[in-house]
Image (cartoon, rainbow, N blue to C red; front, side):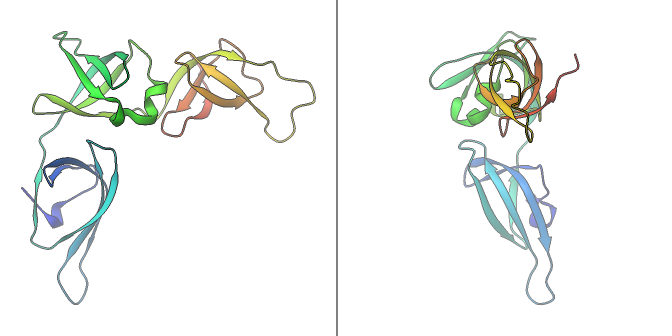
Length: 187
């Protein structure tokens, strides 16, 4: 159990019988009245972010989570399947938890899963992924005013906007949270 003044950013807690991840935490100790901690926390079952204020003296259960590297295998309509490369045990994670990242996930790639009570409860996404461009149009001469972009289809099927100089076969860095081009990969 953690005291409210010990709640910090990047903590995992159990709140209303659901696992949460603290995305932001600020401790306040006003001159009058009791101290409190204002947090923003993400529900790991629904991905919904909510604000909450913990009053001084309240206690929250800190989750004992592990981080395990697992290989992404495939997705169906509802779930994505991962495999532990050491035990070959397979785990499913709801697609609602993966949300917008799913279209940037490549089969066979390793991802870090957050495990609680030997069951994955969420996934920790990298800030950037490197993917190959499989389809894009050619740049048109004279179409280069003010950072012009064109549509490109990546190897996972996702579509993003890229600069005109990117061609088929190029490897690009993508921010999976926003689905934006971050640069050309130098591999």
